[in-house]
Amino acid sequence: MEVVGAEHRQWGWGRALPLKYLLVSEEWDGEPTVWARCAEADGLFVDPARRRKRVTVLGCAPTGRLLKAVERALGRPGEGVELGALGVVSDFPVPGVDPETDPYGALQDDHWYFDRPVLTDCRPSSLGGALFDLVVEAEIDGPAWRPEPVDIEWGLFNGAGGGRLGECHRVEGLYGDPGSLVSPPLVLRGCEPVGPLLRHLVRRRSDGDRVRLLAVDRRGRVMRGFDPMPLDVVASRPSALGGTLVDLWLAEGPAVRPGPEARPVWEAWFEGPPAGLGGWAAYGAEGRAEWAAFAAARWNAVDPGQLTDPVRRLDGRHVTDAPGLLCAIGEAVAGPGGHFPQCWHALRGCPCGGDRVPVPFTLVWQDPEVARSALAGHTVDTAGETPYLDAVLDQLARVGVTVELR
Image (tube, rainbow, N blue to C red; front, side):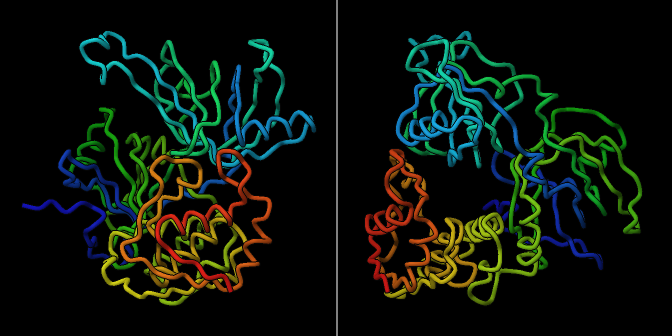
């Protein structure tokens, strides 16, 4: 029997209140177990300042784009330098595993993604004449739940899945006391607990259960999902929304959450995928990034075989930032709320090279000068030399898209 995961089902609860959120866990075969259905969530949209953390990169040997940022920081001390997306990977041996008998199980790695990193301080390192110590503030996504392993080899990368930007001796502030690194709490309003959560509330315990928070639209289709989070209910009480519903206070919510600018985008997509073009243009960069994330999550519901038009048109009048460019290309390829399933990590040096398009097509890009002007100083390639728009055009050509600028 085919197992249908939570994202591919239509959910409901037979109440007058709209269902907006689910708490679920999944078995090894993808079969979902529902823990609760909920009407609202408080604390889901977190101000960026609350999401930011500070780490220190010790003994860094930067290259490419990161080296250029270090040189800028040394030239203007006291001023923050934006780094663009940054990835950090730690590789370390697994205790007790012999690499001779189990070469694949003898090594482990942890990955962190730094969003909107800013280099706030930079100085020569005492670890070597050509090395630097860097203080970086960013919104960091990655493991923070165990002590720092020994014999780590650290690598710095051009965002998630990008090319290498250097090495360092250590990164302070990524591993450590989990109690100081937990995400802010979350309150779920108007919840209908079922199954395992009912048992959990009757007899409070902490079994290390991890659940996912899924957001559904008005039709009951999952529109976004968060990474698993620990289920630690610290309080519950009858909900003001009435009936047998309860409000739940969770000690932790999702580690990575959208900012306040994303709230109106979520409200728009709750009513369903957009029916008209250009809905993303009214939002700022963070809202546009959320719009692009909604479009990407919806891609599984699209039949690529229906996208057969040999000529697609991109309206470039509102492409004033990188997220807007992703929204506009997705819309040109797949219509309102559309997504172009391309691995954009290739722009950062990812060895995947990008995804080939199912059917080659011509993209007629109208008003490209808007993007060229707005993104003139923006670059994401590993060397930090190719302007963002030129890198996108090169990537489209590599995967079989013919672009006509008009």
